[in-house]
Length: 88
Image 1 (tube, rainbow, N blue to C red):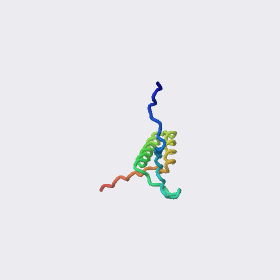
Image 2: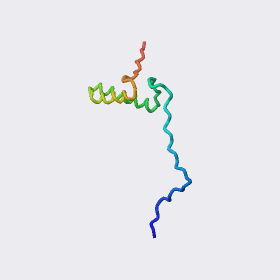
Image 3: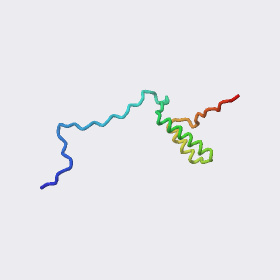
Image 4: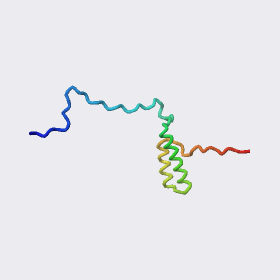
């Protein structure tokens, strides 16, 4: 008696399930900056805070790695830090 295969052979008239198409890129010229998703914005903010900490404690080698990632993302190196409110 022959061993039975675990999956049956495909039926001839069945079509394979097509792969989902990759998401379409925005129709903007390459020079214009793309809007960031919420996840990317949080990631950029975290990288900027990380870079601030490395520069504060003179870890220039690690700050350079973070700057390279920020450059790859097309993000500014400096974070927008709110100015303290003046009180009377």
